[in-house]
Amino acid sequence: MKQTFLIDDKTLKDTKIKSINERSVFDYFNKTYTEGGQERLLELFNSPTKDPKEIIARQNSFKRYTNLLELEFPFDKTIIKDIHKFLVTPRSHTKSVFDSLNFFRINTPEYFYTKRTVLEVFQVLLSLKHILGIIIKWDSGTEIMENYEKTQKCIDRFGELQKSTLSEKLFISFTNIDSFETEIRENLRDDLLSLILMIYDIDAGLAVIKSKNILKLEFAKITTKAESNTIEAMGLFNIFHKKPVRNNVKITSNKRIWFLTGPNMAGKSSLIKSISIAVYLAHIGFPVPALSFTANALDGLFTSINLEDDSELGHSYFYAEIFRLKEIVEKLDKNSNALIILDELFKGTNEEDASDAIVQIVKNFNLLTAPVVLITSHNTNVYDKLSQYSIVDYFKMDIARDLSGFPVFTYKLVPGIAKDKLGMYLLEKSGLIKTFEKKY
Image (cartoon, rainbow, N blue to C red):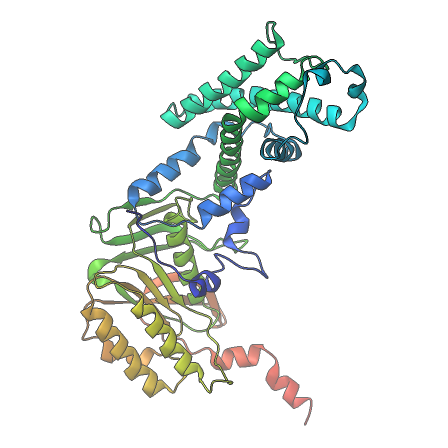
């Protein structure tokens, strides 16, 4: 039974895991050469799972390509595409014995196309055999061995058709080209198509490993659901930042509700998006933006970060917040340990209402068995009301001060409740007051 990791389009959009109009997390991994490789990478990227065995298997499938990084990718994307098309496209007409004796057809486009394709198939087989031979030194599992043997079988068959000792060069003439075409289109077709898919797998796997090295990512350790009840990241960072600040994060089952405070621009949203992205990447078997990342398998990931009111329906921002949270809770199973991230919760109403609403939400999440909830807020006055719940942990984004007493954003996560009041500082820094003064 497939163990589906739950996530919705809103979460994918909030975190830029997927994005149409701007760079997405997927784009950082898309270093493929072939169209088929890109499609395979996207298929893997869109297939999160909560099965630790499946996650580990996928990680290992990527790791086996590590030894290929120093090699130039040996497959031309246009040639692979042409071969794929050749294999799935029926012949234009049935060949007869008279075609084999027709010397004049060597000047036709069809003859040239077929000869070129036969030669390309042979060269691709030789390159694939070499690549698989390198991979076998790391991973001699059933899949790799079967593909290696399948590749050798195809090469041997080419030698039999040439009726001579096969070297690195294949000789095609008007007398034997039909035999080669028939062998490729009919007898070896299924084997060759599966080997093309193997090339796409190699392309996708290499893209993941290249991204891991370039971005300094690491594979996560995912345990069974109830084994650790912990999410821990060392050196976690935001993949979108050119000069990211790393943070250490540890969420345990007895402190599974976080209340994260800090002023605007302090890094709250960046941190929660970093956590979200790391969790998602871990559950697709991709390396994550951290020095290390350990977690028990989660049932899903849901966020409420970028909401909009709906004036046409008469829905306020506050109502949109409530509706989104209701939507998330409805998707949870009774014992779900999904990660739920609520950014600036209930900022669409006054502080007193927001405080009461936050307490009610925390109270109800406390009554559920296992969901992990991260709440960010400017509302620090709610602390006294939340203190009755021992399951809540409190963190803030640290603000330092320079020699003049001005705030310095460190973007570092520290325990506690933020007390910094930066509204007037930011108002002054923006130059708005001076702009007013020029109008007097």
